[in-house]
Every structure is written in C-alpha cells, then in structure tokens.
Amino acid sequence: MKATVVVDNISAEGLKGEWGLCIYIEYRGKKILLDTGASPLFVQNAKALNLSIEDVDIGVLSHAHYDHGNGIGTFLEMNKKATFYLQDGCEENCYARKWIFRKYIGLPKGVLSTYRKRIKYASGNYPICEGASLVSHRTEGLESIGKREGMYLKLATGWAPDDFCHEQSIVFDTTEGLVIFNSCSHGGVINSIREVSAAYPDKKVVAYIGGFHLYNKPEDEVRRLARAIKETGIKYIYTGHCTGKNPFTWLQDELGEMVQQLRSGLVMEFDDIDICQAREEDLDAILKLQYLAYESEARLVGSDDIPPLKQTLAEVEAEYANGIFLKAVNNQGQIVGSVRGYVKAGTLYIGKLMVHPDWQRKGIGSRLLREIESVYPKLRCELFTGTLSEKNIKLYEGLGYVRFKTKVISPKLEFVYLEKTRGNGGEQRD
Image 1 (cartoon, rainbow, N blue to C red):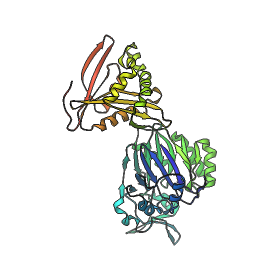
Image 2 (image 1 turned 90 degrees about the vertical axis):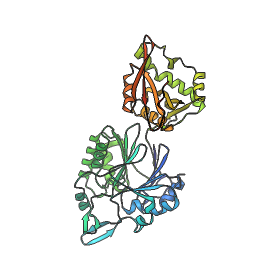
Image 3 (image 1 turned 180 degrees about the vertical axis):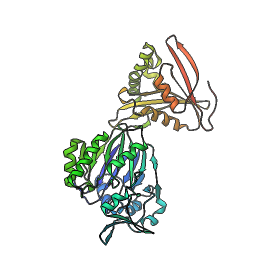
Image 4 (image 1 turned 60 degrees about the vertical axis):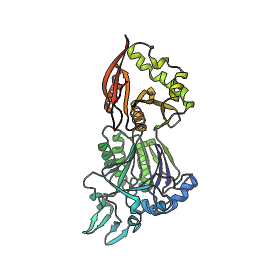
C-alpha cells in the first residue's frame, strides 16, 4: 500500500501547503482520495506529483469540516466515476463557537445536494473495497470533547456540542496489520484505535496516520497521549496538520522514531500484496517458490518423494497453457505466493496453493484461494492436500470446503479431497 500526502500544512518537495489535508492512497488496484483540503490546491499538487485525480476510484471524507471538504466540488467535477463516501451524520452544520460568537467551519453550502447522486453515506463498519472499510465512532460521550473544543452542531432543535457523528476512520488491512487513517482525530486518537480494534478483534493495528488536534493542548496532556499510544503496541505514527509544532516535538520526545511528520509530498508505504494473473515469464520463479513452500509438506511425510518437489518446468508450462495461474506479489516485486487451477465438467480444480515461508500467516493463502474462486463464481470447487497437513485442512474448511474422500498415494502419503459447491455450478466429480 502506498499513500502520498497531497496537501498538508507543511509545504515540501516544491509543493505548496495550506491548513488542510488530502492523501492519495493506492491499494490493491484501487486509487482512493482521502479528503480534498481547504481549496483546489490538491489539484495543483497532485499534478506535480504525477497523481491523476481523474483516475481516482473512491473518495472519502474524514469529517465535515471545510479544511477537509472544501475541494469536494472541484474533485467531483474533474472526476466522473468515483463515489464519495461520507458518514451518515454529515450535514452542513458545523460551527466553531466562543462566547456569543459563531463561525461556520463546515462543508461548502449546497455541496451535499448538488452532488447527492455521487455521494454515499456510511455507518458502522462499511466496506468500500476488498480489504478497506470505514469505521464510525462508537465511543459514548464525545460531545464533551466538542464542548471543550468549542465545536457545535446547528440542529433543528438548537445548538448542540459536536459529538463527531460525521467523523470516520478509513482502515486498510495489510500484511503488516491494520493501517488507520483519521484526518483530525477529533473523537480522540485512543478512542479511534479502540474502535477499530473492537471492529477487528483478530487483527493488530500497526499504524495510525492523520492529525491529532493537539495544537491547543498543554504539554502534560500531549505526553500522556504519547504514552497511551505506546501502550497500544502500534509501530508507526504519521501525524501533522492540526497536531501542531510543539505537540509534535513532545510526541517525538516520548515516542522517538516511531512518530514521523506529515508534509506535502510525503510518501508512506506498508507491506501488502497484489494478487494478479501470472505470466509465462513468472513460471520459473513460481516453480522455485513451489520447491521451497513444499519442503514443509515433505517433512510431514518424512520423504522428498512428493509430486510438487518432482515437477519440472516443462510440466508447469503445460499446466499454464491449459489453466489459470495467479501470483501474489509484494511491494518489492517478489512473487511470494501462487495458486493454479483448471476447469473440467463444471468443476474448478484448484491446486498448488503456496506461500513463501517468510510470508505465511498473513492471510495471503486465503486471499489467493478467494481470488481464484472469484474467476469462476458459480462453479463447484475441488482441491486436495495431505491428510497430515492439518493447517491446510483447517484453512480450507474455514473457507467453506468440506471433505468428501481420501486417496492413498503411497505408504507414506495420503490425500484428503475437499469441495465447495456454489451457485449454479455442476455437481459432477471425477
């Protein structure tokens, strides 16, 4: 996953800055724009960074303040295809209030009605593409934060402290763990981390990116927050915008190199995997991966005399010519996983699902299997593995496969066959 800061308060890399935030995220074949800053500056900076606004697939608004949403109209006029996701609490009703004075700090008036056909409202845990979702606030009592900050909502019933019902995190699943983007963290950094952790209890949060709204906070409060962040086990913090210069220094004092400064032009990358169709020139690398990955299977049966370790490149090329091969590629372009299959008599026969030993237990095998299934979504699927391969069997059964037969290959090797019947696919078995 690659995320580029298009607009931040700090200008850098020959780019201009403003009080606002805009981040361009490239993730598993999708281009996602988080926020649009306080002006059309994001267009100018994106062009300088060779990032296409027209090619963005998904737009996301972090919350309903001007410094994140003033460019929505400009974006939707330039980009003709993206859906723009807002929290269902978003309205044009955000104000800053001090004593008797009120200042509008919300979205451009009329933007929600003008572009209503391009806007979609989200709530709860809301998937926006494979591996990415929006998470709304669930923490009670956030209106106390709004009151403290002098932020209010203008409701039909009168003025109310902002409870940030319009704020959301966008969360990406990577091979390193979950990466959270929350542009201002008005509802609280720790609250947002807890909300995401509760939504995905089997995942670990490894990174948090966004403003922390600390520019007006005292040093002792900032340092307490830093220590609380450290206790979460997060590895990477990228913050800027509304965090403030002095608070950033205090955070860095407490957290060291794990906290980095956002700035226009900053590129952040996290290990993730792209799954796509393999090409013929990939077959040699896939065969070498096969030899490596199946060493563990050989150890289970106590013999190197198993088919995957004896297969030749010519045999793999013949399978490629008559079937489908997928590969999993990391950020460095290394093939770290693969699966193959062929169709016969209404069944997709899946084989050689493999992941590099250094990349196992990161969900890559599950993604490869789901991906090859999706190529033929209505066909019955069949695969097999060794009866001693308990981890493989657990994976397959967890993804909906059921055992239907076993077959003895040799005194030391026995296969178990599993199937998954879907849609209108055939029921035939060989």
